[in-house]
Amino acid sequence: TYLDVSGCWLLTKRVLEVIVECCPKLMHLNMSRCSGIMLEDTLDIISGTPLANNLQRLGIAYMGGVCHRISRSSFEVIAEKTESFLMKHPNVSVGSTQLFFRMCMRKLEDIPLNTDQTMCQAPFCSLGDGDDAMSQLQLLQCGHVICLGCESMARGNVRTVLQHRQLRTRGESVRMSDFDENLAENASSSEQECYVYPCPTCGHDMGPPSPCSKSFSILL
Image (cartoon, rainbow, N blue to C red; front, side):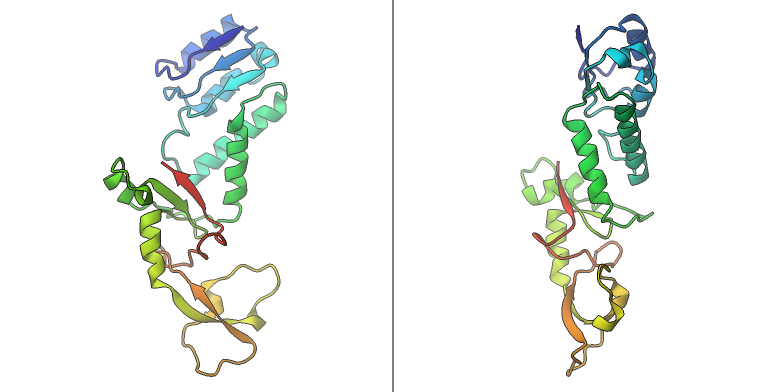
């Protein structure tokens, strides 16, 4: 049996509880784009029920809690809960949503956790104007989100600094503290020039531009 309530903003916790109780033999349940109920609550309600044992396909894309801007910590909690649910119920498939969570979590491992993560306001001012530079966001390796247009402008402030090789070991990432900003005319053999792109929000290195960048794009 199949039940498709995708896009229904009237789906609430109570309605889902009734569905779980009255339709335990459902094999396909599509709740994609149901923003009126949180994904975390959805997984809690379904987990461990007879419905969860019968389900083969569960549509949870763009549900409440993940279809709007949320903090990184909240996203990681939701991703971990989704992964835990799918491990507990291996018969349930959520399609590409699981791949989305896993890909984002792998990307976030390379980006430091900042408590002051912010996003530039340019996309909100120009969204819908057909400007691709304003509708594509970049999650930088310093942990901040910036539109492609503002990133291009910020990279114009590139700084050339000396990297002290003796301070570095294999596997270390580049840190601003590793650089001497007062460039000497005659650099020793243990030093080499490199480029630093200060983030307009925090001043830390944004990392190299594509294709060497660790950042990834989000298309609005």
